[in-house]
Image (cartoon, rainbow, N blue to C red; front, side, top):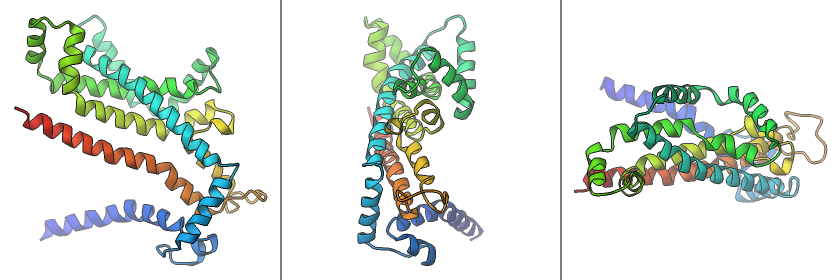
Length: 284
């Protein structure tokens, strides 16, 4: 009985701190600004109000929210493709080969992985500025394409989960090292590839500080920076805004739009990871 009570208490805490804010956000987008202030926090608005808020949001700066979403998708997808092409072979090479400086490289990869992203913004800005890429999409894509966490994750996976005897047998059968990687190691690494891809996509999609510094033009911004700019157009937070003001329910709707792709990718990645792990566990 005490264990059940403890479990129920933990679940209640999770609901209060994680589920209720998201529920409030969803319901806020269905209300007018006056209803958001005066009605119950968990009251439901209407579909008509939701459509009105969507129309007002898309009318802001001529569909700027849709342009920001497209920018985020372009930055995240290209970075994801480069990340997988770099991180997976790098992790395999670190796991399967011995060379001078390997330990130092692993330690430096771990240190960079543990550093907060905000601490790297200024050094990255100086590097990108030195090669003349400030204000281009590559100033966002390239820094996040070389993903230390992905390299370390694949290194751990190939070290612990892939049988080295199986790889050695493939070499004895005449496979080249690249053939062993492509035909044997890579199919076995499907779960970690999906995991690296998911974390890379989320990191790129939620990236704020780097594009905020690197991209000066509004039509280049990803959706995270765009939503931050919307915040300054809400009269409650900035009384100096003019006729192009955005109301709080529309800001809540913009936030929902910004996080929906991450939620969709998470649901698909979760299914893919589970199915990949179970297939590997039951394969004879």
